[in-house]
Image (tube, rainbow, N blue to C red; front, side, top):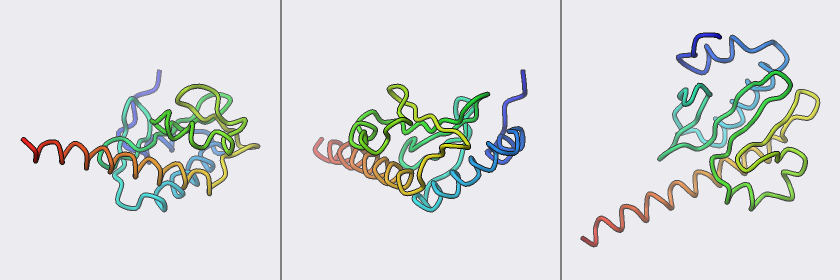
Length: 129
C-alpha cells in the first residue's frame, strides 16, 4: 500500500505517465473553471474546494474518475455525460476516451453555482434569527 499523498503534485507523481498527463490536463481545466478554488487531498484524492467540495479526481488501474460531488449536476448534464457516467457519483474515463474539457468546465461551474447558492441560503437563514 502506498503512502497517502500530501498534495496533488505528490499524488500525480505516483501515477503512471499516460494517465498522469491526462489528470494534469484535467487539473488545468478545473483550475481554469475555478480559479478561486483551493486544492487539497481529501479521502486520498485530489480535490478542489470552493465553499465546500467542488470536484475530485483519481487514477485507478484501468481508468480515471472525476467525482462531481453532486447528483443534481450529473443529472442536469446526463445527455452530455453519456458513456462516462458509470455510477451515482462517478464519471469514468480513459486515456483513449477522455472527458471533454468543455464538459468539465460546465460541471465545475455548475458546482460553484450550487455551492454559492447553498452558502447564500445558509447565510440568509442566519440573518433572520
